[in-house]
Image 1: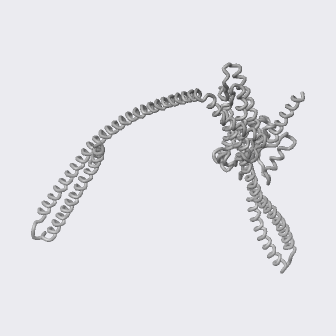
Image 2 (image 1 turned 90 degrees about the vertical axis):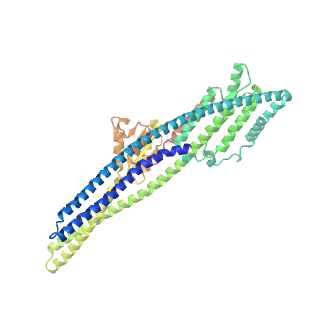
Length: 528
């Protein structure tokens, strides 16, 4: 029934648009037929007038026929106007009925949707209520079952629950004695799970920071460890004891993170969890919570991911340097062509000068010979000049070069970048020169931007970041206090899309120096 009622608006619209078209077609057929009759009458009158004019008076007959034709035409026009009026009336009525029907359908649809939403909401609330009730009942049944099992079996159930803990502790002790060997090696593909396709170096680092914040939150909210002491001071001391022991082992593992030792470090952390919880049994079952173990394992996961992505990034950098060297080979060929063109022009100009002098001193047949030689030299010089022009055009391409973005955290701190330009055959040679004895550490290369007009690109970047210049008096120092993402955004806006960016500064020498300094401080404290 609903399907039939939904077809009525379509039938009404079809009739509204189809009937006027049918009436218009019938009217047009009648008009054409009347026109043909009128034309036939006129032709007949003219024929009679021509044929019988001298004998009969056919003008009256022709006028009568024309009058009939005019009458028929007026009737046709009147019928056509009636058809148009009827069509407009039917169309207007159909539109109104269609709008009313559509409004009724929309209203009914809204009402059905409202009822469906109410039903869905009530169903969802009922489902949540059932789930909550079932969970409460399950928890109650489990609690009662455990209490009953404890009452019946006494300490047997507790011993069974600790069996897995003892087994893990035995495995951890064996690993400490025998070493981890190759039992826990996990391929990097498994360790980072294709993170290189989903994250950049920076994104993985952000994930690592988020996980570390979660670790701190669990400790602060007292969700990292627990024990069965009822007295507050003893409980707090026991929890701090197992937390310090576990965190010390985990931090030691994290300090040795490389891109290829994820499996061994993961097992070390799991072993630390087992041993600390086993030893915590002496303090009323002081233990690390599983959620804290999971979070610290996730921290290891992202630390390894950062190392692996960093390694992949370094490989990409090496590929970029190789590409840059290939580009510089082409530049050397251009420079060679320029030198050869200049040399040929000098030789031809000298020969042409000598030929002109010989021509001036020649007489008779010698003069014709020297004129021919002079013409030949002029042709050669013209060809050499053309080659020279091509060489000059190629020389203009020596404005091609590289605009580099580099940093030196150990020397200038975070978020300070040098934006410079070099046309060296090996652009990294310029970066190495900048990292000579004048600064304590080497520069890190964040981007090496190739450009057909490197000086122009450098100038535009300097002008854009002028307000961020570190040296306000001497902007030629080319150092700018701005974040790397801002520099990258500006370069992208200038149309430099094919640029590889290293967003994280390695600062290897600087970080190694800090590590050595910390070790020396620890040794001094121990000696003191």
